[in-house]
Length: 211
Image 1 (cartoon, rainbow, N blue to C red):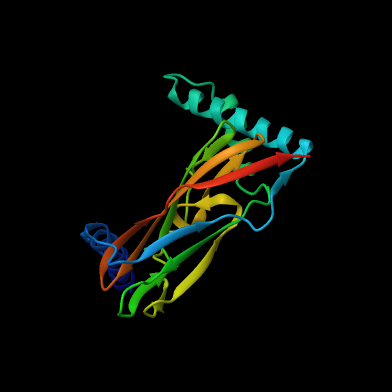
Image 2 (cartoon, rainbow, N blue to C red):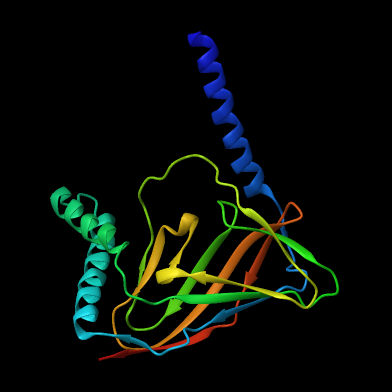
């Protein structure tokens, strides 16, 4: 019985590893005419001075954490403290949501996968107060399947990016710590017909105001 259970466990882990490897090895294909557009919030982004002060302190902790990790012999107590601040900030609500639209201008319907581990968003944000918080923690090892969607000729589908989150399972995120103008680019990766598709938006201008 122990040998049988061990065999099934090994086979399950092997299948998951093979599935991840197969997805990673898929060749990149052209976007096949699909267009990606990043959409700004309908209302002006306004953050209170208290919010900005809190976000700025997190940004300082994130920078200090990267510096500590680069040290040959970092102070472990300081490292854990900074990691706690940054990990907690991954759940901070700053109220900045974006949308993106995928349009099919071709004369044929195109099927895509949406959600799941094979579909990810990457955000690139330029601006004086933009702070990147990549997730470096653990996550469960199961492979999560997405849902198939079809975009008809001339049609579009819109999706939401909550709290500037990105990456695998939206575990990473950006923080905006200062008022000002920002430039945001979205890279959306998904599957179509068993092959990878990568779409890149034009840069979006976003203004953040302090009240």
